[in-house]
Length: 75
Image (tube, rainbow, N blue to C red; front, side, top):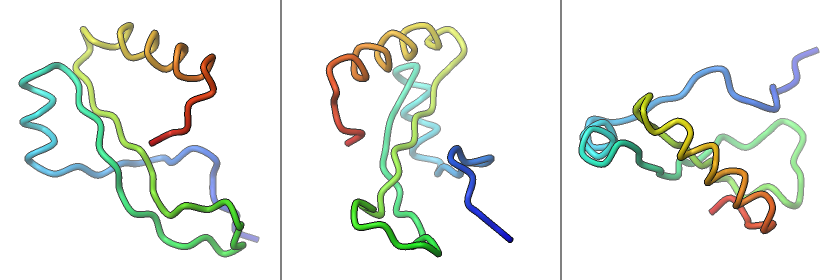
């Protein structure tokens, strides 16, 4: 039986995303997801993508920790 992984194993980005990452060190965008096999009412159909340069990794980790502690939604 196939079940979707809770964390994706690959990600796709466009040239403009790469350019934004190079300019500021990190960049976030949303991407439409395919409808899951088991439809959930809370499914929004969007996935947040974050690209970053290695020197910004700790900044991203701090941002993620703060957003989680505040209970912010992904968007």
